[in-house]
Length: 116
Image (cartoon, rainbow, N blue to C red; front, side, top):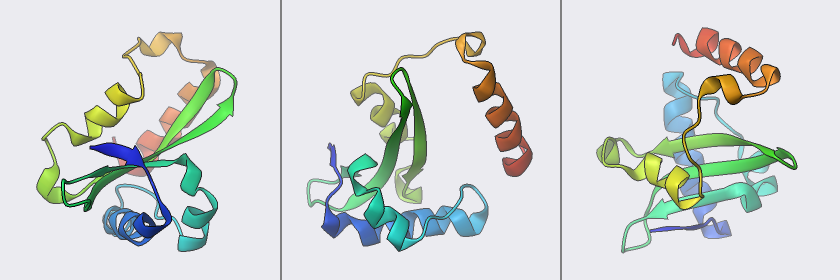
């Protein structure tokens, strides 16, 4: 189940982001930043309310937002948890050519950092 993140989730979110941050898969975020941006986060939880995934949506302006810190616990990879975040938030796939030029620049930087 996906729900808005709560204060009690921050340590689990931090641990998840640190795990992937140490592997170099994403940029880790300090606890202070997570507390400041709690309102941006949603979490995927088990029926026992254990956080197994997280994702932040940060609005840039009226018609553009950035998906940040999308991470899923390793045991739950390839089970649709990450893609469910997008579907539940109403996202649909579009052709990359429809994105603003500014986004393309960011994607090149991301490819260089992540080795894609």
